[in-house]
Image (cartoon, rainbow, N blue to C red):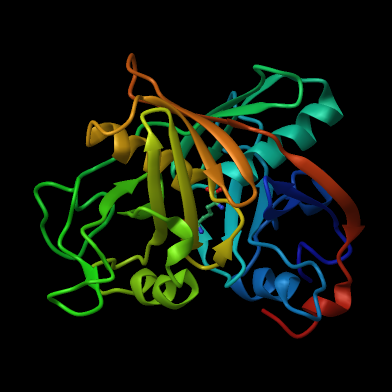
Length: 295
Ligand SMILES: N[C@@H](CCC[C@H](N)C(=O)O)C(=O)O
């Protein structure tokens, strides 16, 4: 039987990024806390009735000093190494239950330190250090300078979008610099770019407008989830890419369709800190019938 059958979940959102949190650390499911791609898709399906951008599954800790190992699923069933907005939701859920104000979690991409603050309704996630090497992102071919890579959409002599910066925040991001993030049909270009052969593991695609050295506006087409109101790791990737191009300061406010995030690319250790809110919507329990026919 699926580990999700009859299990409780919390529907939350991180500035509009739709998140479902499931805690499979309880003893009843020890040893079978895995969720398959088909089960993750079933939850988000119309029959599942719990649409989400990301499903955050807490599994028993694999390292001393961590609260949980977190598996992150996109709604197409694929797994991701990072989800900034999802992490803030997990952190709020756990902190409200335990009274903790800081904790460390493990994901496929590494360890994440998280804490409440700098105000009571804000949560900060240390998203770790960005990676810029073409093999780390990864790209399908060598680019020595990933501040801009050769990639375009549209006619060769008059491209609609071109020369993105690429960054890994534990997941792959391409950032196209534009004057108006709403002037492009991201629903059309997003899937083409997400699946472009230059990205062997696909990529999250962001349009970014640098308003001034302290403010950037973005819209993101998420790998495995499509258009979202917010993507925390994209906000981090954009802030870092803009600072790397010397077009913004290392501490910026990012405006996304669903709200704002504070991003600081810390000088002393190269880590990226993401700060924002996390909202609780409702709790529920997964109907076992949903998983009867999926592996
Ligand atoms: N919404 C997320 C990013 C989720 C993962 C992404 N779609 C991927 O596959 O890399 C965030 O807030 O960071």
